[in-house]
Image (cartoon, rainbow, N blue to C red; front, top):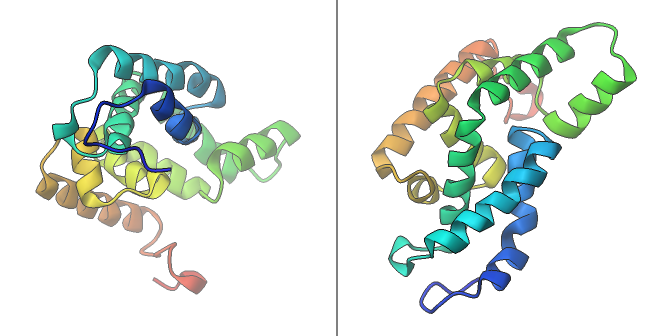
Length: 178
């Protein structure tokens, strides 16, 4: 359901439309427990701050709030990516490690999780909004309140670092042949 941007917005409608998506984004970056707390906080901040139609679509605005809250949990996020990297590298997984890796990392490999942990926060935010949020460059720029060109340069820099960390393999190409 699209939420109109040209009229006063109903916060209940915004919540009903985007809560699950915002919660999923936060859970993929932090943890399910953090997402339970922070997703609600996103909408609390949204209600307090008020939406300005001049900002454009509601979705990037909400993701921007979520990304800023996630930044406050930056150390925990980096530790999580590094832990996922180590977990994936172990030969013998416990049931808990295997379940955690499947639920929180999805298709991410240990090397990719480690590489994500090695990116600076700004680059990682851009990559994850594109990868996990499915955002366009313009939506990322709106969400993070940065220029469009900055999005492109951060994404390019991050892709190079990630590709290098993966042994010059492009994980998006079939057969992983670069």
